[in-house]
Amino acid sequence: MKKIKVRVSERKKLPTWPVGYGRSLTVMVPYPENPREGMCEACERRIDKKEINVTALHHWIYRYKHNTIKKDPLKALENNSEVCFFCHKLADALRVLLTVKEENLWKVIRVAKLMPESMKKKFDWVVRAWLDMRKVDKEKVLNDYF
Image 1 (cartoon, one colour):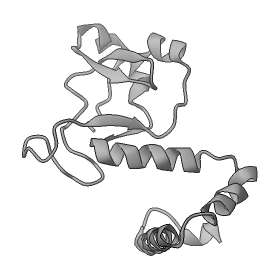
Image 2 (image 1 turned 90 degrees about the vertical axis):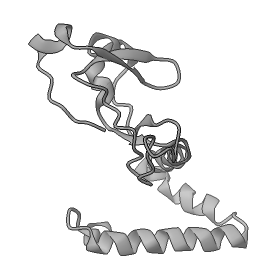
Image 3 (image 1 turned 180 degrees about the horizontal axis):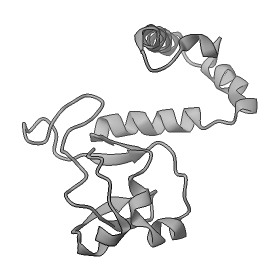
């Protein structure tokens, strides 16, 4: 997704682009160009190469109420990633899983224990791959989590 700084004084002169915010709100966001680039940030498939048909802006965090977004539509571009349909489903699942309050995180583990063995093996792979990736991620320190 394109990240462009927009001054308040410029907003009325800019073209607008539709951006969804939750299930029931679409706002027209003033932006110099379409904020979508047509490429999934996760799997890197592209519309221009006909690998996918459409992308969506996935909101990792819904920080604002609808009235706030209506007053300042640029806020709808915060905390999101441009993803294809398949990756959007995965991102939605991760958002649900990881917005569990800290005092309820134990429930995630208890629910995971109920999975059939074949799913547990896939989950083990995902967790190991995630931890391996985080070890080489220069932006974060994995040790903070243990």
